[in-house]
Length: 119
View 1: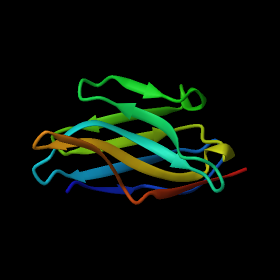
View 2: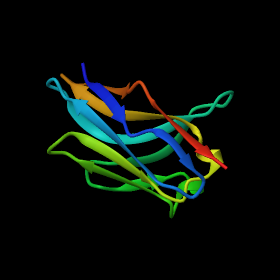
View 3: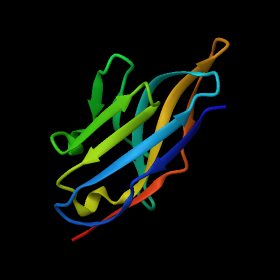
């Protein structure tokens, strides 16, 4: 199966920046869309940003202009550059990938990395 491993979370002051990275082990799978989601305590998981194999990007409105998603298919990684961070960005950030093997397509998740923004 595909394994996703996130890194780069941490504690940062409001207005600061962090860069998250997610590395995928393909193990014979084909990777399609990749993205980042987040989940704050007591709240539902929400989409932050996604990027397709063609490089098409999609962002939630509250992060537009502050976050940038990118991918490197040679290294099987997807990164999230987060700038001008706000306390409301505090959450566990999870990497996601849509993968396929033998005609079966499914969604795969990483374990998550904590991002805490102090005011």
